[in-house]
Length: 154
Image (tube, rainbow, N blue to C red; front, side, top):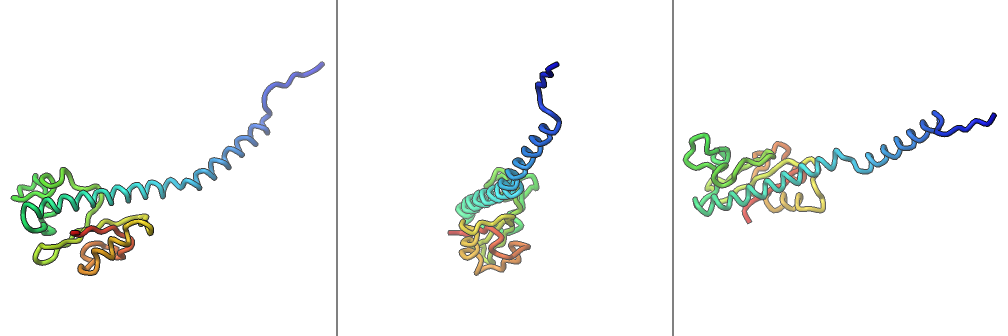
């Protein structure tokens, strides 16, 4: 009697599953989704901060000065006479923005904390450009400079 064995044995299936598991593990390590999500979040924070910079320039054009830190926190729902968020920006940025201005309100520095700062991008350049004239501890809890992205008037 000749047996016609069609199909796979349990051992063959287990070997195939093990090989696929190893390949999936290698792909996940190569892609590093946690870092990619962090870099995407950092990109959003940089973009939000650049929108804040444009809104600050609009504020300066209308008021001949930059807002104080207290004015930066006002929204139109708080009953403030000058609302930064709602008038100059539609809504507050998703990232936490650290902001400081000088005594005469002629200049400012704003920054965001980054999880994955870029060495080849503008992150360290933004610190060199904006940082020297301000106390960075007022702007960022990290105050490490290269771990943040900063904006200031051009």
